Length: 305
Image (tube, rainbow, N blue to C red; front, top):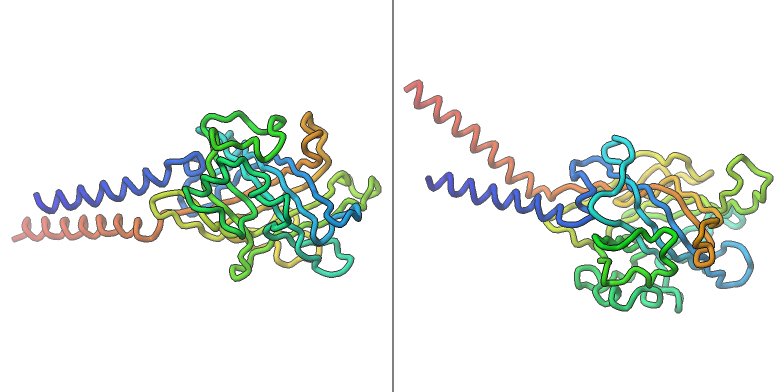
């Protein structure tokens, strides 16, 4: 009887971990099975031309939001996000050009006064932070979720539209150099109608980011993503390796939607995450397996005696 009580306690602990890990909209749209969960986005953005040269260049700032409307789990085809709304708010800075004239730019966290998260976010959401913790200073993206809000697409006119009354920050992401992260953008605006069939593309993006903070309970661990981008940025070798957050197939064009007065650009792309319970959770189930084997051997021994 004592052993059964111990097993029951362990089972409750293990199932509690699994339940807690699925307590948010983000988590409820992930599999936690070691394969990529892909979120398909529609985004809006503005560029702050800090040097006034009229083209994308080092020091410029890009801010906006990503609306995750669909998911693709285990390659099973696209379906709508379940249980609420998911989005990502971003404020990033062009930090370098890979080589003079390459028009391949690297992005990092933004510290330009007037355009940081502290300047752009709803005051209540900023104060709440990430589960009560201040937003990491290296954060470039804030993953937010809501069970009450309407879709921000063609509705949100600024980042302050995402208020604490409806939204919570559940994770942050950014470039961690030690992890080999990068955020790269290829400026293609010079095609000017004389290029390939997709010459309306202004910027092409790919990124490998780290999860800096998250509120998912149950000891969730984010793994690196694998696989190449659908299209690699020409001359960039990093675009076939991805970290905990992979951004692929992102293309930026002029915004021609009804909210174009608020947002100059629109973006479509894919975000991939790969989260699993921490190894300790699997260890609990491993103990169950060993106990089961031992019990079976013991029963057989008694039967044969």
